[in-house]
Image 1: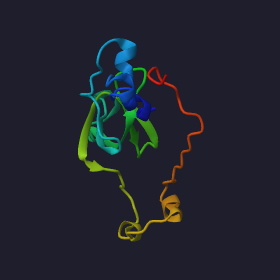
Image 2: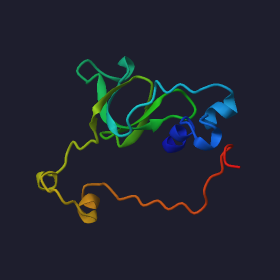
Image 3: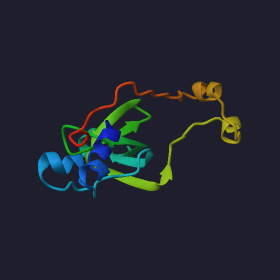
Length: 138
């Protein structure tokens, strides 16, 4: 969904350099809130949900934008779930997230599919069989 969210806010040559979002809504979209996908983030834990010695934020990679509310989606590795929050700090200079990779995998330059599966990452292959029609493709 993040890819579609971004694509609808980019100018299209088929739409005379307008965005699909702009054509449908009648105004240009704001892109000030857009962030680097997969960058390191820190999600604030509300005071009500933490004790005195708990950390104020939890770390995880940025996963995208929430559809229903103006918020970000961040994967919380410790809780193994996606957290939706507006209180997010971004470190866009750091891409990816690997808190507990084994040393032999970190120093190996040629990763194969088997080693990725062992550490919890699966390769994703996407094939498009039926292209999606937009308001601009006529």
